[in-house]
Length: 103
Image 1 (spheres, rainbow, N blue to C red):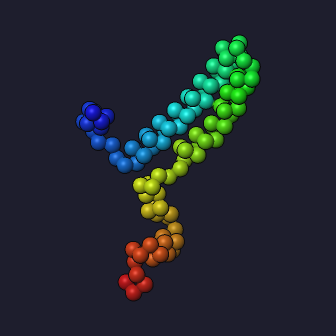
Image 2: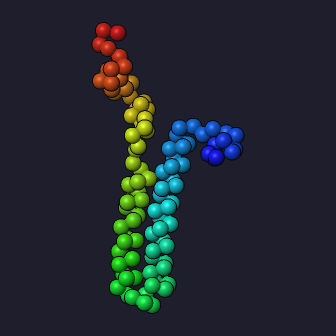
Image 3: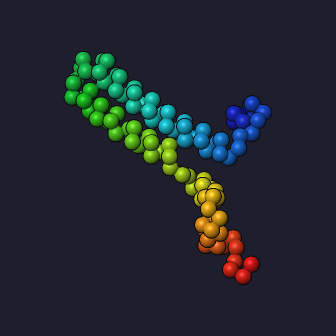
């Protein structure tokens, strides 16, 4: 059963989007920490080369986690947010077809 139905409260689109991003980021960073700690806690006892390889993989994960957490999904409507500059917003609305020159 979906969490929103269990709690009785529906989450907004932005809450769901940020929850999905946070979940992905923390899973990736948790995997990074697991690899790093386990490499030097007990894997090094069997193979130092494997421990170093695990650390190299763990080193690559944080930038990937940042990219995953900050990327916009295909359903994210971040471009609809007004910039605060009325002239720029009017120009973009015209390009998007929201307003026509004759209106």
